[in-house]
Image 1 (cartoon, rainbow, N blue to C red):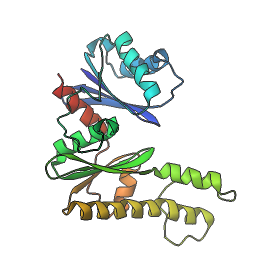
Image 2 (cartoon, one colour):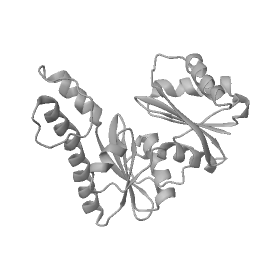
Image 3 (spheres, helix red, strand yellow):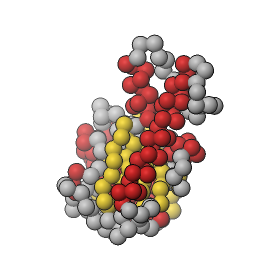
Image 4 (tube, rainbow, N blue to C red):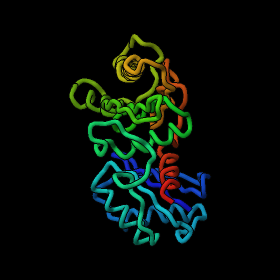
Length: 254
């Protein structure tokens, strides 16, 4: 079995695969202060609760954008699963040509998403990933990773508004009932949530214009479903896109 590990700034997401079948997936907080032993206890507990023995895992693949945690999960894989993990980065086969000034500078998660989106939806395709940052990744009509956009995540935007404006409350994000707010909370929801939808749609329009042709738009990440319901352009929501990409890349290197 394959254990796919996606290490992000906010969460670590695990996916357990038998061949191409996703048997289970779990989410943990990212914490650079935790050791491999502390994370291992949580991982092993999750696997055990769903009847999966660690001895059955013969492949581990890691995508990481938090350098301090990359080594932690590398050691975890070797110590508790007795396997040297595949790590997304230079030297690992992705079958994705990257037309970026410095291909090594593209985040591992973005490459993984691009691989999955092209495999699932063909090319051209545009991936919008709603994470700590919101990223837009463009795979052109030739199937090449063209580049993309990085914007502050919607949660970062909301938190900054709360922290920097003394009279504004900390709010739970959601769709407002109207654009013109009748109180502070409604006004903030409209500005943050609907404003973010406009940011997403506006960037998609500009990306398509620059490409000179349309591209299918796929969303993933925490707020993907909510934003997609309001967006004019998001056509698919793929919650497990990154895990799918990790499974594919592991198969390329098997």
